[in-house]
Amino acid sequence: MASHGARSLDSAVAQEDEAPPPGPPARIGSRPTLWRNWIAFFLLGTINNMSYVIINSSAKTIADSFHKSDDVSLIPWANVAFGFGAKCLNAFVLVPLGVPYGIRIFVNGVLMLGGLIGIAFAPSFTVAIVAIVVSGSTAGFGENVVLGYLRLYNPDLITAWSSGTGMAGVLGATLYIGLSCAVQTPPGTSRNDKLLHMNHYVFLLATPIVLIYWLAYFVILKKPDEQQPALTREEQESSKYRTSETTPLIQESVSESRSIEAAESGCSRLGRCLCSSAWLSFNLGAVYFTEYVARSCSAKAKEKGDPIYTPTCPEFYAAIQLCYQAGVLVSRSSLGLVQIKRVGILTILQTINMVVWIIIAWNHFMPVAVLPAYMIFVGLLGGASYVNTFNLLRSDTNIADGDRELCINIAGLTISLGIFAGTGFNTLLFHLAGFK
Image 1 (cartoon, rainbow, N blue to C red):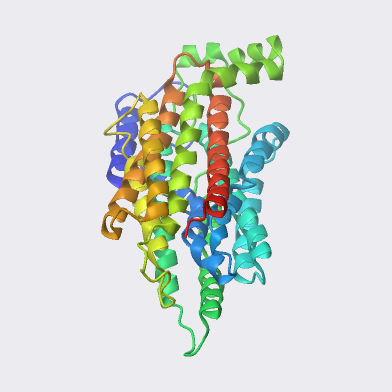
Image 2 (spheres, helix red, strand yellow; image 1 turned 180 degrees about the vertical axis):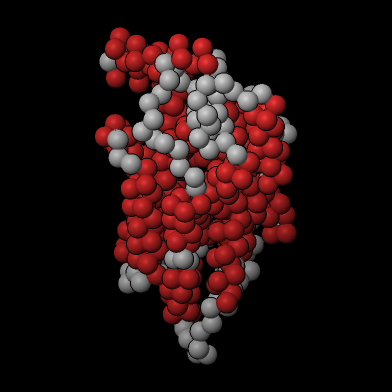
């Protein structure tokens, strides 16, 4: 993961060294700054998704602690419940209003912190769900904010962000398991009190990650001059102006964008972008739907007769989520080695996985020893769909440059819709089908 990012950054710097561009000087194009920004975006991606992962990893513990074991899928559902709205708020309200990125990052961190504290002190399952909604919305909101901000930076830095989000899965699940095992309760404590005690300290001990989030953005990240006006097409052609930090993630022609905006209404543009991104967005949303059904089914996947929970340390569910996150990390960091254009194949395979996991949850036909490896495969497909879909949206020549960012945001919204639908489906499945 890191080596691929390193090669990308070294390549970017080497190209600048070989042919220094004429025109305005690069604002932040040195090798130390590239590495500094790589670290910053990696940390932003890691912390942005870490609380989300910790909550999903602890879903069974939280549900069991309030005697709501059949409502375990409500927790990942709540984790994305407002994600769609938060992304829309950023894309259609805050961006047009020009709200500074720093303010959005700071507020996102405050909400993240408030959500973690709320879960730690939740007196009831309902309060815990509300706190999870608050904390979970920060992952979707932060994703859209940072992806928008990356337009001002070298395209190679997208690797830092995507690798960071993949690492969040592994670190978040590992952090939850480690902290849970470290939390001890007095002898004679009831099982329910042990679980509540575990939740309390695990989520309190996770709160310092918010400080790292703010540190990455406000201290480590080297900011471009956001107020510098964009060059016109004529200026770009005459000077061949290219820098490592001002080259947008999505190349846009200002004059072309303005002509598009002047010639059509917002609804017409939205309709065109929906059509342009429909197939890729559908596959991405479908993959997230199927994989979240499979992940929730793993809470019911233990063989009959096995202990449901080990109070002194996280049980099978947390471990299986770690396996999923390991698969995601590998595939999200694989774009430099393998690129998949037929993402529909990934959707079909993940749908088959979903059906198999539902059967596993129903009759426990598959040995427990095989399940971790199988969940890694689910993670590999999910991460591959994510990284290849956004790569195709970024490089699709059939999408106008002025529409590309909106198309990417539409695909991002289908992630929230897929997770929301998948977790809701599982809640109904567990209640109506009588899974034990």
